[in-house]
Image (tube, rainbow, N blue to C red):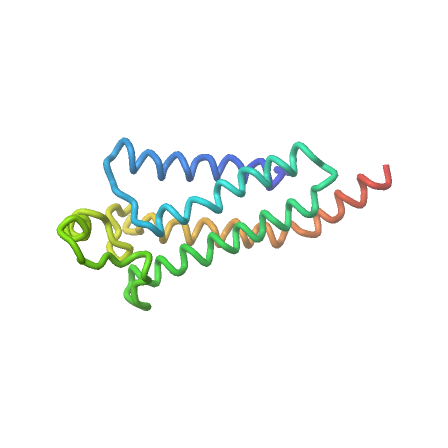
Length: 157
């Protein structure tokens, strides 16, 4: 029995978002700006995955949008991981400059993109996201011929 990629991707996207929100709201970890930004590809994966399942007419185009979202996820999490490991300098939207008392307080209390607040099996959530997104992108690219074959078989029927 062959398992379809898109339903599994939808389940993984939901689970990833639930874990991120659970860490934030139930465990009290504050995400940095990039952590929040890294959630957006999963929202779009849910949308395009649902489109593919509910509108088979747009199966190929929605699949390419899914691959694009996975590429964006790999880029964002790769960038964030590079920041965490000090390979590149912190970007403007990550750094907090102290110009007032309020911004100085937020600088001290808000999370930074450079230090992960939580680690799971020695990996930051960003590193886990990079691994997951890369794996899903790899599987998605390998699965392209299957999507094209199913589309051509559907048009013959």
